[in-house]
Length: 109
Image (cartoon, rainbow, N blue to C red; front, side):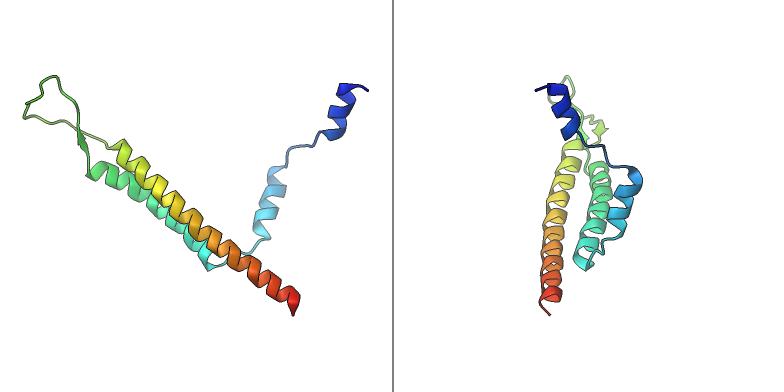
């Protein structure tokens, strides 16, 4: 038993870009799946906007300094991105469940 022969038998090629594009294009997405995609795109940009609007003060050497240098709020941006991703994935999952139920219904009738 040669290990290299076993690896050669089990080896699969990486999918090409055209085949991935065809597999994505032939699938019809329902309203919930499209809505979750666009919602995530909007929340992505909102995270950047809110990170800039609600900026934080940069730490200074003096504790009681009155001058505050505004700094981009990365933690708020990442938090908004994470919450938006979780909400989008949940909505996409509901859309996928609806897609599967409609597919089952088509096969039953």
